[in-house]
Image (cartoon, rainbow, N blue to C red; front, top):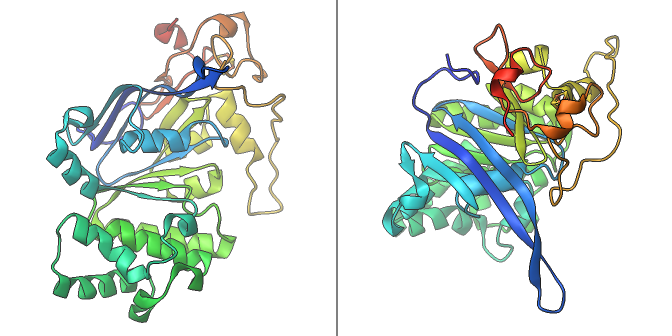
Length: 339
Ligand code: SF4
């Protein structure tokens, strides 16, 4: 087993020291005066067949990282390897083939569906772009996909505004799966849905993962959703991964104070059970000018002087091979100090 909780040796997707900076322009000449460091030096692997949950507060860089991994917004620096191949070095044809294998589901399926296009045409677009089926086969494939996601074949001729939020997300899933991808980035796919519909969509994603042998990066700010669906969990704060590991380890033995605070604030289904909620003071810092050293130090209840000066590295949590955290107070952290 690997130190970040994963079981295999060769990752399907390897993210190495990825950054994504956006320029801040000001003045009459719109000169670049600073950068929003949305993703700031991230390393992790995603293994075939797993669901890696990526969790953190709004604005921490989760969605930007997901888009950078797909090269929808290429990283500023660092590399993303898919199945052992650096995406940045792929030619036009390889990139097109990759687009078929990596798909994305968005939080708001309504704005990601063309309101003037019947859903059958929306779903079959991937078949046309990637030349996967002739005109006669497309109708049958669209019908099959609609049924797989719990819709009816008659829905193919309807328009997005005729569907509920949950149904639109099912259409989004059908559109993503029609090209037979291996890797699906699910970007807050249930955040806009009612709780009862959320569980239906999560169960559908779980079933389809088994059936199509998919690998998921599941991005969410909702810890209970991530706990339900993930095999491993990565916690993000101000553009960096601060903790990563096996789901059970992260939820039962969180080591980073930020993860501990997030878990303590998550609601519990049983009203008889109570948690000691850790209240964090202050706001999430600006990614334009993050705090020095550990960017969590202004809010951390156990911060010491070293935290203001030295950025902690992700290191193995002592006594386990399935868990890593970036905190100076984790035993053994001195091994991983990074300026
Ligand atoms: Fe808190 Fe310091 Fe650990 Fe950062 S490195 S989480 S500030 S104790």
